[in-house]
Image (cartoon, rainbow, N blue to C red; front, side, top):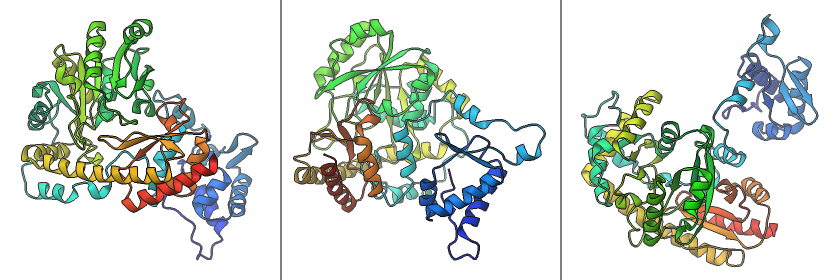
Amino acid sequence: MPDEEWLPVKASLIPLHQQIYEYMKRKIMAGEWTVGTKIPPQRTLANKFKVNRSTVVFALGELAADGLLESKVGKGTVVINNSWNLLASVPPPDWNSYVQSGAYHPNIRTIQEINEAEKNPNLIRLGTGELAPQLLPSERMKDIFNSSSTFSLGYSEPKGNLYLREMISRYLKKKGIEASPSSILIVSGGLQGLQLISLGLLHRGSTIFLETPSYLNSIQVFQSSGMNLFGIPMNNDGMIIDSLGKLKRQHNGALLYTIPTFHNPTGIVMSEIRRNDLLNVCQKERLPILEDDVYGDLWFDSPPPSPLKASDKQGLVLYMGSMSKTLGPGLRIGWVVGPEPVIDRLADIKMQTDYGSSSLSQFAVAEWLSSGLYEEHVEQIRAELKFRRDLTIDILNKHFHELASWTIPKGGFYIWLSIKLPISYRKLFEEALKEGILLNPGNVYDRNDQQHLRLSYSYAPLNELQKGLIRLSELIKGLI
């Protein structure tokens, strides 16, 4: 809530409490902190402003004396007046009521805390599902733009740049997927693909089947559209589908969402037999599948089984891919593949929401795919990720063998760490954060999970990865 960049100047002749008072008063009087806005706790403000708590108490007391703030036991401190209230005869709108009544659900508390903490460049991020900045091909990306003058700054057509869709069609053919450019929609990352599907294809009250645990539980895109998520357990072969037909009929199942290859967060690869069985059940039950394959290129020793879409002969599977996990999340380029009427529908909605994904990013991805640079880059990333995985496994073997169990992933970013003895995961999250370590606890992916951590070996520098994991083992021992 306070500006990230603002801090009181300790060398100033103006007392610290006066600087904080003036800063907070400006925010209130300018209407940035509206009536009803809750002020962070005194301890939080003291840490943010790097001052003693008594300094913050003094500043808040002055604001309360001015009639701008009010503190109530059990409710904290809130803004009760601003310039509009003090000067206008008609009270201003209560923006907090608007915020609370919006249709889109807020992120769960832990995700909000993770998103906020990721702004701190000094944290060791042991759960972040991105490539480390030094692994992203920044210099080659510069070369691509510097060597060409043919890119456009205008809007692309509704389904996305035709040349890019042709290159994706060619790229997908290597995975066994036959998809013409007209059946491909370019989206601004996989998350937008999920949002378009929720808006354009599903009825409010529909049930989405998904693996438990699942990345989908960590975002609110389907829940905010009035959908219900129904988790289905997994084993080492992937989603357990024995009762899927019965569940579909009982719960009015509208869609099955799955990450069959290097599953997020468990790293599991659905076996070929399970994939075939899943397709057969869903065909029989007429249950559409949404296949999320953003990690499919990141295998280490041998390629995974072909995507579900490669065996789909009835147009049952919507297939999502993305460049976020290989070329960089900032490109915001992904795609949805499906029957042309579905793609036409999603493209129409996309044009109503953002009028097309970045033309520059589309140009860049097309160049990577057409030139062969993408395959060369992915080979390098696989080698680096495999090295990082092996390093992480070595550290786990040395420091976690009595504390936890895990399986060795064959690709992707993640190790699903299972703690053997019960601990408070909230306490672990908070204690780790105090130590400069950011974790992704299992309840982010399954609200009932109190046993797991999602560890990522893809992001933290190697020395920080080692340091963070060793310190994490010590924190866990302290909580057992």
